[in-house]
Length: 277
Image (tube, rainbow, N blue to C red):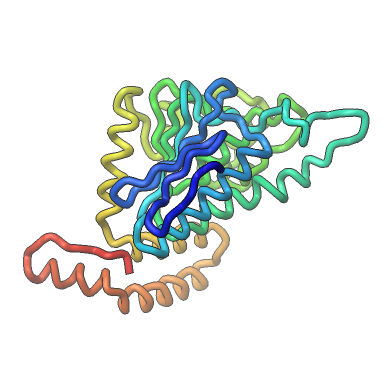
C-alpha cells in the first residue's frame, strides 16, 4: 500500500483507502470520491489489509473502535462496473466468484471484529455499499444520504449480506420492496424504519460519530465485543440456545478485568479506567 508499519504505527495511506488511528479510534475512509467510492479489485485488497491492521492494533491495545466512512459526496456506490473483473464480455462473468473472494470476507470481517464498528454514511450508499454500511454495528447517516438496493436494476440479487440483513431490520415486506423496486430510501426514512440507528444534519455527522466513537473507545470494549457477538447470534439462535450463549458470555465477562474495574469504580464512586481485557 506504500506505507510501512512499525510496531506502533497503525496508519495507512493506499491508492483507494485511508486508515487513521487517533486515541483508540480507527477511521477507515473509502477514498475514490470521483467514482463514489465504488469497489475495485484494488480497493478490496487494500480494505482487507486495513482490516488486518485494525485487528493487529486491537490485539496490541491500540485500536478499540472502527469507524467506516467515504470520501467526498458518497459513502459507497457498491461495485465499480467498469472493473474488468466483473464487466461482461464475450465470456460469461462469474459474479459468484467476486462475492466469494471479496464481499463475503469483507462483511464477515466487519462482523467478527471484537470492537464496535460504526458506519458514518455521508452520502449515497448503493448496492454492496448499502449492505456494507448495514453490516456495521451502529449506522449514522447524514440527512442528505440515501440507501439504494440497486441490484434489481442490473438483474442480480442483493449480496454482501443484503438479503439476510434487510428483512431482519425492516421486515420482509419492506425488504422485498427495496430489493425489487430499487428506489432511493432517504436517511430520515431509513431511521424511521429502523434500518439505521440515527440520521443527523450533514454538518453534524462526523462530529457526532467521532464523539460516539471516542466514548466507546474509553468504555469496556471487552464487554462490547461480547454484546456484539450475542446480538448478531440472536438472529439465528432459538431462545434456549440464546439463553445458553448469554450464560457463557456472562461467565467470560465476569472474569474480565473490565468487569472488575467497572464494579470497583461504581463502589468507589469514581470514573472507570477500562483497558478492554
